[in-house]
Image (cartoon, rainbow, N blue to C red):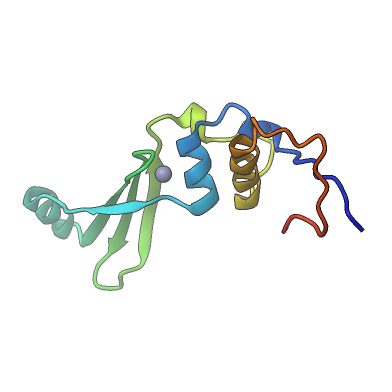
Length: 125
Ligand SMILES: [Zn+2]
C-alpha cells in the first residue's frame, strides 16, 4: 500500500556541516602521513612506532601508537579540526552512521516538493 515519507533526522545532525555528515556516514577518508626520520628514531628509542593519518575531508588527525615488537596498540587519539562541529553533545549517546546518512538525504531533498508524493515500500534502515 502506498505511503507518504517523512524523513525524521537526528536533531544532533542539524548543525553539522556537509563534510561532517559525510565522515559520520561513511567513515573518515584516511590518508597516510609518513613519520619524519627524527620522530621514527625518537619512538624506536622507547620501543614504539606510530601511524599518523589525516582525513582528506574533515582534516581530523588520527594517531595510533604501538609497542615493538608485539605491535600491540598502546595509544589511539583522534584530533578533530572542528571538535564542536563533529562531536555529539556529551551524554546523548553515540550516533549511528545511518543517522548521518539520513540527514544527508534530508538535505539533498530539502527543496523538493514532496507534498503530493506517495511511495510504496519503506526507506531502508
Ligand atoms: Zn573525516
